[in-house]
Image (cartoon, rainbow, N blue to C red; front, side, top):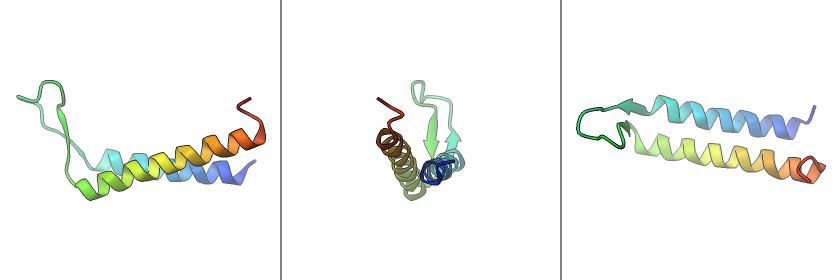
Length: 68
């Protein structure tokens, strides 16, 4: 078990949970984008965690030779 990849998964999961928690359905006139964020700062932090977590996973897998 590679603990660095596991840490990347945890960071990405926290980011995904933050994005889920800060999203609300508005419906109505917003035909193309019916979802809005309730807290822009937490949403940005969620995106940051998600990107960092995925970067950790991909970078470590690349160094292990799993993505050749």
